[in-house]
Image 1 (cartoon, rainbow, N blue to C red):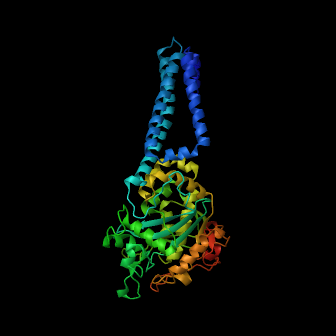
Image 2: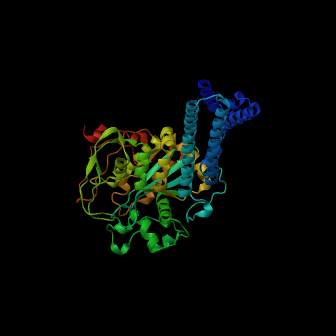
Image 3: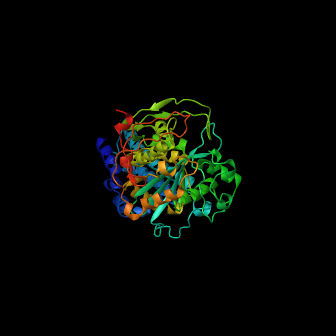
Length: 499
């Protein structure tokens, strides 16, 4: 009895061996050859055909076929195990022996069925994510998306890819959607080196290209001259996403996300860049994906408020104090809730300080995407990803985007200081021309390697005299416009904590 069970176990690990030992040599040889052949093909493809794997991972049709293949192989494996046991078990067995054998085989089949089911569910989760977030060019509309002819090498004539990263703050009690986070990521498509530039949410007079229909509506930038040179919250950068499409629907052309197209056009003009694509992050989905990844690790250089609202200004709720604070310290492991407030907390702090923390959050998120978390929690990550992202990146170039993302993970990511003290001491009339020059110098080839610097700059003081402002001690920073490596910018700086 024990010999038969042992042989059944071995035949499970080497499909077909049970048939050979049971006298069905031709069938066993066929199954063994087929099994070994499949393993060799998988190994060969995994080692030499990464492009094909990436293409399959982002193609809903291929993913559906992959799911079916996983299920069929699992069923065939179980059939081989059961059949092998029938050939290998002794002819004269007691009822107890038959029951024990059946239970053992049942456990083996269960051991096959569980990973097979998990694998199929994971592939389906990937298919659901790709189909839910990334639409094909034929099934989506964008007034600003570039037309790519070569889907396999879309960056052939694109030395730098410019992405607009938007954080949508559409929480409870807020009217409409305010894009409080506006970051441009300019990526060198050859090396993956990336420059991040943050724009302040309260920028006024955002420009539009002269050939844009929006320039005719706002020839002097996005503001209302009739109101005078005063703060105009309904003409802040973060209001464009909602206000312009509502006032001028369809002005840029057919689009699945008019607000994002408006932002791409205006932010690109302000920075002197052609924005290729956008990625919009829903804050609640952001919290869930951080939890799915097991948290992120950041350095906190000063107290960061959790919650809090001034009760005035666009997107505000009723006035309230923060419910608590994230305390300073190195290598702080944050869950989704705390990571979200690390990125968006601003009560008593200024927008530039929040922009810096948002860049550090992106940096930490990229570094936290380890293979173990992706494998063990992929279904959670995919589910959160559907709620997290909205984009105009088409399915057809996703393999190339994944390749580029792998380069970015291993390349230099730097912050470009747009010089607040000189170029936008307030948001009423920023010097966009000067900012364009800083961006141009920062991303030109000779400046592709960021200059090493001391840790992050302190958060700047709030311009409002009515709002409390946290003002950590001064720390050294590189000259304005100099790309600062985010490893330095996001380092722990005890000088800022006062310790």
